Length: 337
Ligand code: EPU
Image 1 (cartoon, protein in one colour):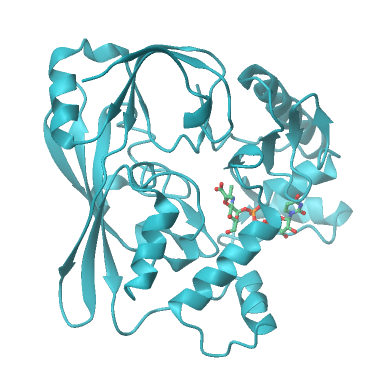
Image 2 (cartoon, rainbow, N blue to C red; image 1 turned 90 degrees about the horizontal axis):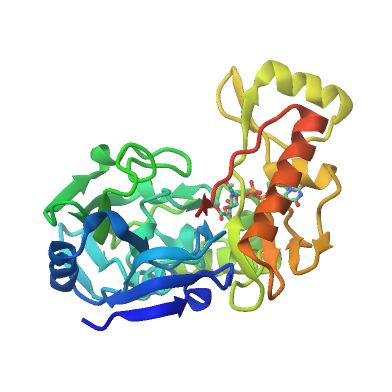
């Protein structure tokens, strides 16, 4: 067990914030995790996996556990399905590509999402008409207080739009170590309904897409809109898309007839936060090294040396502005630490 002291977390969060951990330990096996939890005062533990959905606004005075447990296994369930399990420290996109290479379908729409497998269930990652919960079977997790292992089935996780039991009722109580998915091997159910995917496939004259084609289309769309965290620090969408009453949305449409929306049900309408933020004039703006992405206003960016506090200040300015103009509250999607 090699604990490092006063370690910079810059490399461990995709925003590239230079916060310092008082103690830092990389965990490479479930056994090691259970051992650490048995000897450490349990309250002062902070878990970091891919660091792709957090904004660090302060130094972390705790033992930071970086969960880097690796390994993938495949079990045949039937002629048509396999159960693919991946350990928490696998890179999410590499895992998706591994599945595609092996002709295991179901995760292709979630290509190129930054982060690790272990944190994917926490916010039920989603993109282009698909969500993790669609193929998720179960995950194993270690209870921080007792060190006991628990298996959560899909129904136990209370998955919702960018939310789960791990982000709500059980927040901070478990460390996910392994996630299992049921994937197709023969007849893949492709989800190309998201307009941009269809366009990308059409542009390449693909009429009978494979899971690889869908993955490539998603990669192309993401690359065209979203900044690569290796080049510009960011955490993907900073806010959730707000849901408002359909009556309020109709009023909004009187002033903005072209406002984009997703109809949730008769009474509720989801409005893209990126559009609201753009209407408030923030798109592409920059204050020092903290800014709003040029191509997608929902993504806040760190051009280099921005602090977590500066980005937090910018996010509050955006929330205030959207509230003033539209009377809509934007909720953050990333975890503010
Ligand atoms: N829009 C604007 N201006 C902008 C950004 C968007 O007008 O600056 C408009 C677009 O023109 C479009 C609509 O808003 O009409 C929706 O935009 P987009 O398709 O880019 O998707 P989004 O709703 O902004 C969500 C997810 C993304 C996910 C995409 C695709 C949330 C909070 N975000 O974004 O997820 O990749 O859909 O499925 O639900 C993430 O969670 O980190 C993330 C990137």
